[in-house]
Image (tube, rainbow, N blue to C red; front, top):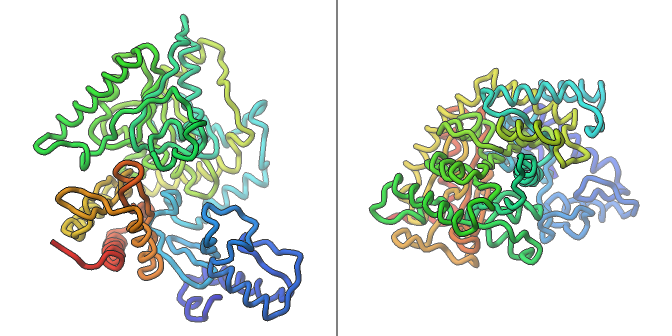
Length: 504
């Protein structure tokens, strides 16, 4: 339960929520509150209530929860309140959220402008059937988003998650070739990169190349998705090879894959957005008439120091997915952009996108996303990401480059590191990863959470989808220079706490 020390240390708004949560548990002595926040119909003695409630608050009552959590043993900590970048758990612990959840809460938790916009939309109407009707809030959001591409993209399709966006992108790529006159029905193949991740639905999981995530579902995944090497300079670039030479190597490999599959059978090439090779990949796609699909679900909408990461290299995709920073976690929102080439083909053909979701373009979600994007633009938050992101990267390198177990640090803006993260190795000279049994990423994550009080997002399979450990951070766009200094100090403290202060 909350202690008075914990509660008094919190900001007023968070303290009020914490007190209310604690009070709810005490006011109903004959009702069990499960970890999903719902009351069961069973009755218990007061002592049993207190014992079970305390277990639930500590996150150890997985068998009591009706929620199918990602991990059932044990159940996760319960979030009771959040404000700014502070998250309060129901056991009284607080955490500085330096990952924005999963790179989502880009302007922090709680915002009166966003709240008011959502409430106003609920008062107007909370849902409309997008199969038959449009609405102005959706038009306003789409106009804001297209304006943010400087008119390079033509239309945006709005839905609820990044995986949905990738599914839509795959179908749009296929439909594009079917709309051409003459059409190209043979274009059924997609090319992605090894180790990539584009979502957990069957189509998006098929598009990704992360061995660990795919393993359980291999027999169900699409067989028309092919892969080329990951764009990972740390593990892929040869000694003495320049970045330009490495990028050309990747371009040559992609070219060879097109020739292997048949140049006119490939519908699209899908990649996340690591720096240095957009232009080379786009050139190969254009050579064979394929579409370039950029997955900016995590890296886009300002996260890497520009509203869209492709702006930094001047390469416009044919199709692009966005999600996490779109509505900042105030509502589940995602989008798929199409450029003028794709839009024109659709308009000249059937004029219909053969795809639909019940909650696509949800008006309350659109209201949230529109207000978040206005705040990001009006408060120049992307400029702040670019400026303080450079400082964040510099401090991370200064503090951790020489650490005995930190093999690589890479990223851009406020996404350090972007896809392969801050990588840990057992041997820096050979880049040998730790054994999966060592659970290094989890140890760093738990040290950060339990001992230091920050969030570090853990991941495994960094090297080959099975071995390799990393953590990443993705602070709020509002992060200041002093915030950066505190965050880096805590990141270093977490690594030292988990792995020991062992240096070369």
